[in-house]
Image (cartoon, rainbow, N blue to C red; front, side, top):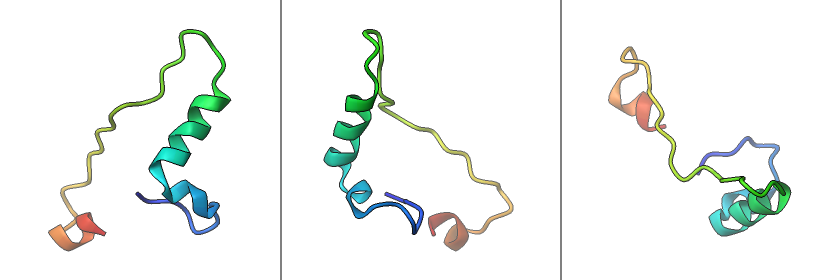
Length: 51
């Protein structure tokens, strides 16, 4: 998990993070994200992509 340096420490705990996400969205048809696809620029080498 990646979080900004100024984010609270609990953000790094996945279960606590998603519990907070689900608690904030009160709509009946709300769905939290289950998967993210991120594309990294091809100009980055393997080491830069993994950091």
